[in-house]
Amino acid sequence: MQADNKRPPPLLPPAARNLGKTSHSPQAANRNSYKRPCGLPRSVILAFLSKRLRDIPLAIAFLLALIFFIERGPYRALRYATTGDFGTVYAAARCWLHAANPYERANLKDELARAGAPASIQSDQDVNPSVYLPSALLLMTPLAWMPWTAANVAWCLLSLALWALALWKILARTSLSARAKWLAVAGALVFSPSYVGIYDGNPGVIVISLVTLAILSESRIARAILLGIALCFKPQIALCAICVLILWRRWRIVAVAIVLFAICLLAGTRDRSWWQSEQRNLAVSFEPGGQSDPSPRSPVAWQFLNAQTLVSYPVPDRTFANAIVWVLGAALTGVFLLGAKSRWQAVAFFSALTLLLTYHRYYDAQLLLLAIPFLVELWPRRITFAMVAVCLLVLAFPIQSVLARKLGFAATVPSLQQAVLLRNQPAAVLSLTFLFAFTRRKEE
Image (tube, rainbow, N blue to C red; front, top):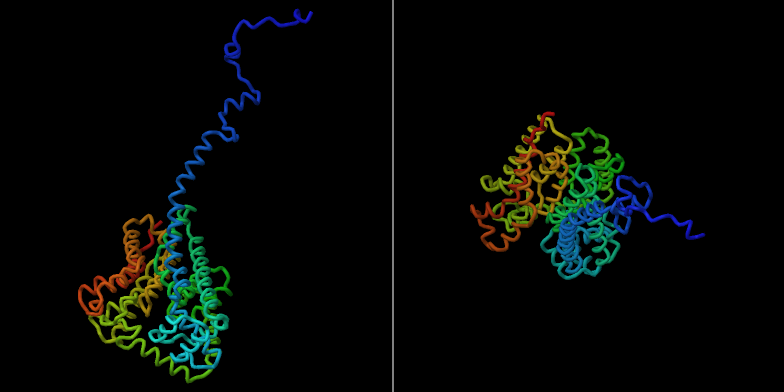
């Protein structure tokens, strides 16, 4: 009986019997989709792997830039105690706490010895005169309570944190893709003025970060406080944010920042006689052969970015040289204001103009990171973009420092060789200021 119920064998094989029919069963759908064992189609897997392979060179470039930045900057600053610039303001703040004159070198060296600073940091005070305003010493008191090692680490970490936050704020204002932003971060890490400032422990790293945040912050209160702190340390850098905020008609922010600066300045002035010492140190710093002398015979002029290092060739008189530079700056500002400019072009222009007008060393060139959003706008204009990129490339590495060491005594002899090899970076700053002033917005 069971044998009688069996069906007869099919006359056609299964493949031929199903020819022309469409199966809607789940098993057939899985067979027809050609999925991998993980459940994803082969095309999706290949696209995913291809994208990840394209990211590998970018990841390698970023890691190499990060290693370069850490080794050249914070590692050497902490390992070999190269932060002499921080040592000066730190020792001056300790003097301020103990009611000693913070502008006397003997007092600075005594305080550094008590704090446990290395002998190299103490000897740096024979070269670096104390010229920071009393307002800066007042704000440095939280670190001045610490011993040298703890204060040096805290200062380095604070510089790194604020620099990274400022860079993140800058890139957040651009329309770059995620990949392009990582590439921009790698470029910023390789841009040597940043690591040089951290290597020296110079307050300029923190001040430039505060200026950047004051320009880009959304909070008016935060802007005023950040700008006020920047003024307390280095007014010549804070000038950039003041110009930008005035152009944007943020009058109250600037006014509050100046009031905050004045309060800190008055509170930090514990003895009026200290002002005489500070003014004496400042005069000594700018006299021929001093640490701020921009003349061709200066042994340190190759470190400067301001235009006085260029004008001093034909105009040796310091007063006339300063007047020429400021008249040039006023003329460029007039040209800039006459044209239709974007907000980011204004930020780029005033960052370059700030470096052009007043005393600035190489590490202050990190202020030009503020030009990144305008560089993104310039990208369609290939010729202008290329000229700006060349100027930034000249500033990207401490070329003048290397050449000055190789030239030796010849670095202090006015000559065409000196002008070409040891003044190319202030020339790049001057060129950037011209480019940012004369570039016109394209008509829509």
